[in-house]
Amino acid sequence: MQTNGITITGTAQKEAWQRRVLPPVEVVAPGVHSVPVAFPGNPMRYTLCYVLLDGDECVVVDPGFDSDEGHGQLMAALGLLDVGPREISGIVATHFPTDHLGMAARLARGSGAWIALGQQERRHISAFDDAHAESERDRERMRTWGVPEGRVAEAAMSPQGLHDMRRLADPDRRLGDADTLAAAGRNWRIMETPGHTPGHICLWDDDGELVLSGDHVLPRISPNVSLEIRGDTDPLRHNIESLQRIAGNDHYEVCPAHEYRFRGVGHRARVLEEHIAARSREVLDVLAKGAPTVHEVARQLTWSRGWESLGALQFRLALSETAAHIRYLATSGVHAGVPGLTPVV
Image 1 (cartoon, helix red, strand yellow):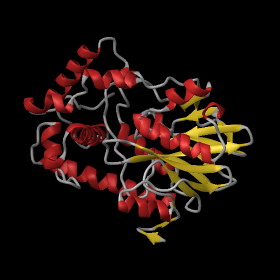
Image 2 (spheres, helix red, strand yellow):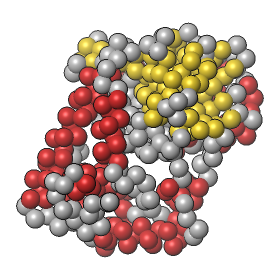
Image 3 (tube, one colour):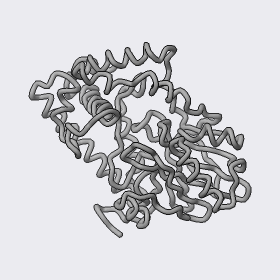
Image 4 (cartoon, helix red, strand yellow):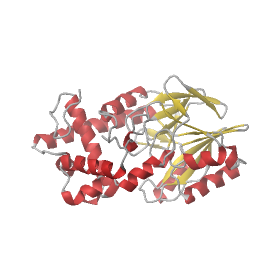
């Protein structure tokens, strides 16, 4: 099935996505299985976890959000593959957030499996001593960004949210550009693709022409690229560079962490780069009208569900994405920036 320049290979996954139900557990390639794991209370609904099997070795990639529901789904799928919970040997998260790394700690406790993250994926958002003091610092940052006082608490990280980030697993291994991972009878080439997060990685099976893309490239959705607490100071620039790194290889089958499998990764990367350029032009047009803060710029931008619909996490992500665009324009010498977002030398 072809649409928007890509070929959809996960047709059952796309049908499930459109029907807003869980897709089936599927064999993607020999030894490679996709398993949906619920992401409660989030518009993404689930994460596509990949189980890599080779004899007695079982590596789980992006195990998903840690909930009893999701854990049950993953255990049921492993049972169908004749794998017990203690037989998981390794866990890889393409990046840090809870819908990817969340269940890693639970799985490792039950199996003794090692946990791997990208070389540059650091605990920047949970690098604090006092959660309440950190939350207040983030509230002050939101005020600097022009967020109305009545919505500051909504936009800022709460002490409980910060504590939840602290509970995520620490890695036993780091994976970077020079590394390969042997799993499912394949040698997966690691590619660092910063942008969505500072240490995001993709896993490439060049012989099997398969790539586990995490959130770096999705078939329909544009992944969020945010300016975050003590994170990448110019994430949008690094995201563009990461998209350019994968601009070929359209014949590879892409196994993303959300939505559905497809071919045409190079085409999709170019579309995403064009989308970023168009968004930056829109941001620049709003800045040219004299919008003085991140919040005021974000409020005047086009949002797929409308600005008024954005609340809680989606509100924060919209602000942080807008900030990433303003920072990119500033570091490119196109605009001087707004308070709190001048160029970083």
